[in-house]
Length: 51
Image (cartoon, rainbow, N blue to C red; front, top):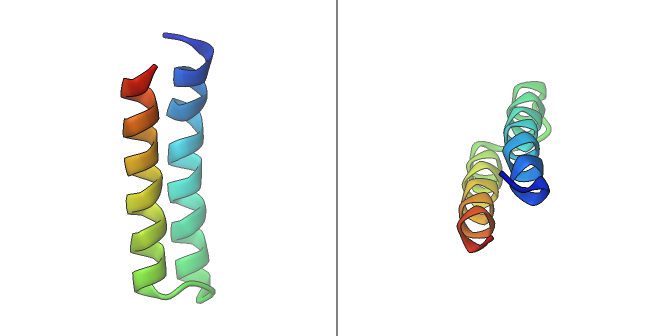
C-alpha cells in the first residue's frame, strides 16, 4: 500500500465521523451529512483505485 492509499484509508473514516458528529450536534442537516459521507467515499474509491 502506498502512502497515498494509506492516507486515504485514514482520512476517509475521519471525515465520516466528523460529519456524523456535526449532524448529532445539529450543525448539519441529514442531506448535508449524507452528501459529505457519500462524496468522501466516492472520492476515496476513485483515488484509491487510480493509484
